Image: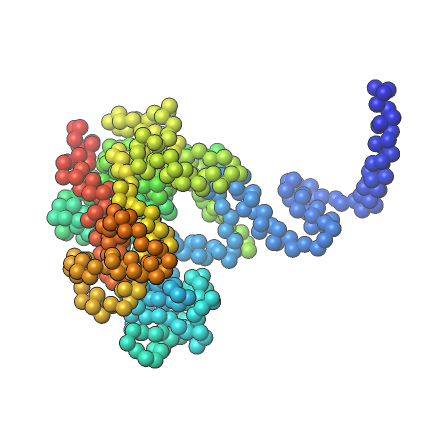
Amino acid sequence: MKKYTPTLLVLSALIGPFIGFYIADVQQKTIIIPSGMNKVDELMELVHRCYVDSLEMNEIIEKTMPKILTELDPHSTYIPAKDLEATNADLRSSFSGIGIRFLIEEDTIHISDIIRGGPSEQVGLMPGDRIITINDTLFVGKVCTNDAAMSKLKGPGGTNVKIGVKRWGEKELLHFNITRGEIPVQSIEASYMINKKWGYIQVEKFAENTFSEFIISLARLTLQHSQGLIIDLRGNGGGYMGVAIQMANEFLDKGDMIVYTEGVHQPRSTDYANGRGKFKNTPLVILTDEGSASASEILAGTIQDNDRGIIIGRRTFGKGLVQQPFEFMDGSAVRLTIARYYTPSGRCIQKPYTKGNTEDYAMDIVHRYERGEFFSQDSIHQNDSIVYKTRLGRPVYGGGGIMPDIFVSSDTSDVSSYFSQAVSKGLVRQYTFKYSDVNRPKLSQYRNYEDMVEYLKEQRLVDDFVKFASAKGLKPRYWQIERSRKRIEQAIFANIIYNSLGMLEHVKYINTFDTTVLKAIEVLEKGESFPKIANK
């Protein structure tokens, strides 16, 4: 020990003044932290009272809140007061506005659709109109962003907004005074008989009004003599768990388990079917993909575990955590994970995550694509060491989404780099929007996708698109164009149908060549969609 003494003396001499100064300074101004505060509160109090520079503490807190929650799980989130209204609006049954759907093209608002019964329809706005002024102020160019447009056009019911529009064939701007009103938000925009036997319902989210829309859709399909159902949950990111439970109840026998939840501070709570559902014996197929999450997975999971129907498509997202909103006095809120949910077989389908690392979690879908999961069932990575059993003893797995009973790969056999670039650069959308706009008088003569497709086939639109894309910088590669010609044509037709006829006819057209939908029809035709009945 003695041989280190000189060194220690030197170090002491060097740092002693600094230690002495620090101790002396603190002794001169002692900070007393109130008892009962945790370490985070203590730190914020110290920073507030002692930091060298002046600070805006609210700004620091706003930046700190999300970081704290990322240390918990990927789905606990902080919502600033300014964003809370917009965040909640997506799951509400209505919002206050003028009742249009729009796209921003060439720095201008283009109205793509008018919501029926809304204020814009009442004053005579039409699809294809371009909004040039809002409240007598020019609204084109760099100021014309999606957020700015929403801010200008939305507002409290009963308030007025004045817009000036450029309409095809009119030389002067047309001016409209619109009184904002409540605009219904649809969760189900596509519900129809896909053929003479089977009904199809596309559910986009689980919002406040989704169950009532669902029941209305079921009733209409029943009146059209539907003998079975395809429920499309692809791309449905979830919403209210209670809505998924209500929908599942329509297909299950009394006492069938739907879902249960449990957390450290949340005792186990189990939901069972009450037996009042009207469709307990209806053949059922549910379509899923990697975008099907949360409430979608609850519905798909209970149907699968109860052997009540067949899941077709690709593996779901893998969100098995339940969030509850908590609001603060300043109008902000957190959505805090309070429990995990479990399907009837006992599996939690939450995919793995590392606390504090949301980037890898967010990139999971990309990683699935890169390792070929979208194209081959053998490429799917799930923890198959923990096997659960459905009611009939079929093996199912947890910890990474719901694996469909029948896997349908993403068909890319005719996808070329030319087609990929045409889509990714937005050229297909730009071309079809311009085409729909210029040809609106002619296209308005058609009332369904079948007649419109017959007309569009005569127009040689693929060749016309190639010229358009070339002028935009995408050079023709003719062998790739021929390889992807059918797919390019389908993309062009689908966009024009959407622009001219709306979502329902768009979905109807897409479903004529959608391999997952076609597989569902095949399963229904073979009577293979109801394992419970088939095994009785």
